[in-house]
Length: 249
Image (cartoon, rainbow, N blue to C red; front, top):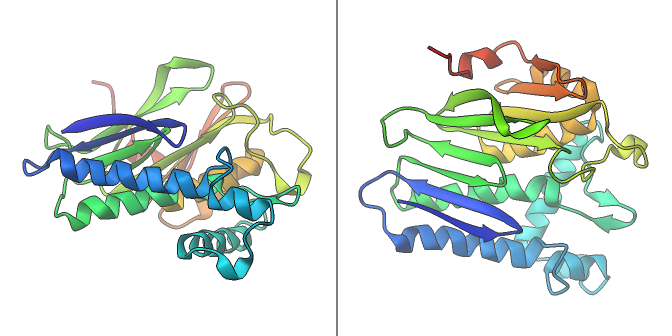
């Protein structure tokens, strides 16, 4: 069963291969994403994050999920030498972590229901569990940042997460906290494969903020691989990224 809805301002697709799947199970996942959107959306004045930014909610009154995301964001800031920072111009923006975090949590909902073969994609970031309908690894395409209709690489993954950070779709929405007023123009996209989509999303965001140095950062992370495309269309990949690439016959 495969369903797509627009939530959190992007298409979210869920596909479950297990024969016992029901619409009710998939709807539980969509309900969770709706909950996350209502709590973390910067575009909703009623969201908790918006109220925090307006000074309407004190730290002592933060929800458990908000505190968890803030704690994980601070952990990521320290692990990335400050290249990941949810604080900007005196406000909090958790978008660089919440998407991957919520996809990963959503995958736990399906796992707890007993499903063993599924994937969840939200805005190009993916958690892939088990195998697809053909009893093969899940295949994921990496888009050409110069041509959205072209796929430059296809990777095959199972029980892993994939996240791509870039400016070619949404413009300059990622910033380098060390040079907050300077746009990131050296690179256009950076795709990261790792143990789960929460980890890949946060590190992809931080690595992209590093510019050309980002791919070197990913290369040094144990259990992660990356693929970067720069402004000249030149691709650079980490040492073992190639093992995930589907070869053309």
